[in-house]
Image (tube, rainbow over the protein chains, first blue to last red):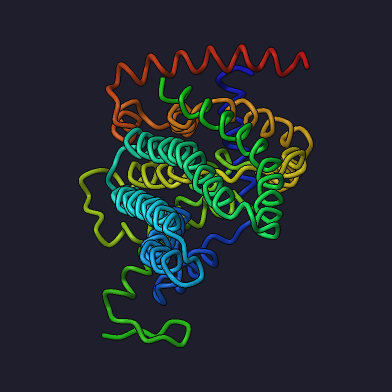
Length: 189
Length: 178
């Protein structure tokens, strides 16, 4: 395929897609939704997701302090567990909030494509790195809980079941993570 | 002055913005759709990317001042909408099925469809920025426009375009030999 063939194929793409749609109807639909403040881009949805997770984690921080220090778990060692959970939730809340703020600075109207692509890759890589770091932290906390509740067979059975299911999904997640991280790093070079 | 559109009363400014928006989309629909199609791997993704592009165009149109041409600005917004979206991973084994459905949108005639499919596959091997350079070049954008939208110097655009074409020529040989 030489340059002329590529351009012919490009023109064919445009003509074909133009045949399928009535541009004016689509534009009117979008305008109508925008007037009612109903439309969100994928980036808006991602930002909103990070904001929800940040709020949830921020709420769970004091809640975990209360739960693990209540009469449900009357144990000094549970104080350490409550602090570990609270720290975990505080860290995830801060990280999610930073992603929410960072993604909000991406401006598709004024930034260059290079800037937007670099920022998108940066945030995606950071998200993947944070996941990789938080998972062992979470496992350590759950492991600690399993150790403290080792006399409770139901608790142990629940933790082991969760661990096995998590492990199966975890391997698949790890393979996808490595593939995506490698692709993002390749684009940075 | 107020205008009634779809049972909603609009102010003069809102009506003017809507009129401009529809006019812009009617004029640039081919470019917008072709760019979104090139970044998509499924019909759902194509529709999402196009929706994102249209929303961003609406949001930016009110502030758009003619410091660059409208066409250049449309390239910028559409390409940015595509590169800022994190692609949802297709379910394992469903990628070729999704692509087939995507290709059903184009090329009623088999020869045309094959050309479009080949271009889509070749362009799909490029990174986000290289893809943007390639698509603007295919759309006959000037090196000046490409450098403005991408944020690169004209020399860098020329060098990268040359490398991209070499890479695609090699990929095309591999693709034909499969």
